[in-house]
Amino acid sequence: MPIIFGWGRQTTWNIGPVFRQHCNHCNNDEYWRLLRRTTWCTLFFIPIIPYKTEWWLLCPICQYGLELKDKQVRELQPIAEVNQLFATGEITEQEYQTRSAALNNTATTTHKNRSLPEAQIKIAEEAKTNTTYCDNCGKGILPDGRFCTSCGSNINQATV
Image (cartoon, rainbow, N blue to C red; front, side, top):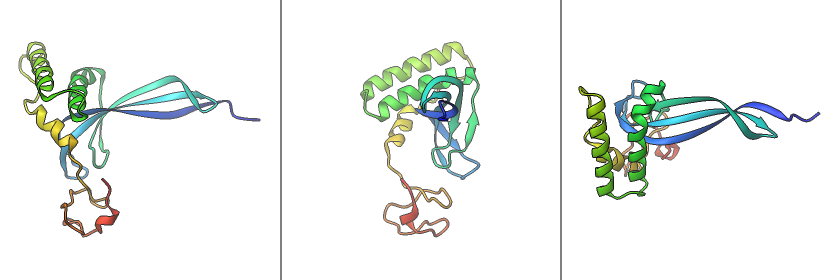
């Protein structure tokens, strides 16, 4: 008898970079990414009904992070979306600055004591860079190096 129904299939959507954070797991300072993970019921291995949605803020190197609540997602999602649009080249730098200023104004009026990071252009620019990291320790690798300066692993084993 064939299996018709299934559950547990997960899809992940990368919203974009949010802010620079130190990761206690891999000891790197990188721009963490906002991700949405949805778990589905399937029919003949085709996702039909989503039954669980989780939002995560993750380190891009080791995928270590924390699960977010709805309020946190509502605050971070617009930032991540604008950063991602700029990083992929879908909007110009001028449009990026305009949208970032609008987000800063919204954040200032809704949260009098807090405002969004002012260096959002740096976030998007660093998201564009293609840095290589060591698979063994997670540290950044020098462009012309053959071995990781932190743990000595061969660069050929590193991923981009």
